[in-house]
Length: 203
Image (cartoon, helix red, strand yellow):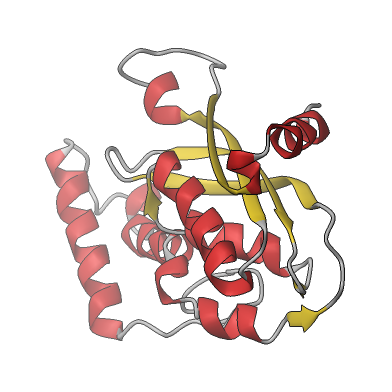
């Protein structure tokens, strides 16, 4: 883990130059003042630096090396049944309002001669979550990456998330999770495969 960039679940990430870190904090002071606050008061004195560090942690997925993480954990195996990792907890930030959305991802694939180390699937979810995101894109990115790397018979991804941009502002719709899915290969073409996946991810 690179302490300058935050915990992308054990992945090495590139350090940001100090000048960029200072720039984020300086802009945060201006934002606090624009909101009518006094950035010099005791409770806010260190807030710009804390916000800058938090933003680096929450966007450390941009610098993560996906190829290195996945390529080291692909193995040849004659297994062709569904592999599912469900209930992967994630936290991300909506790119439209910079407010959190969070929930669980369910990721499955059917191998065609290659499998991936199971721990890499939650790491892949975490990498894409630690960016400014929309849930639809994040769902597709996870599925497409697994397809490109493993060339499996199919990939299925379902994400269920709560969006604070809906709950705290705007519609103020409380406890209304958003569900997105990406079905590739046999998950899209074969109804039985899709139904098996949907049945397995039900609570």
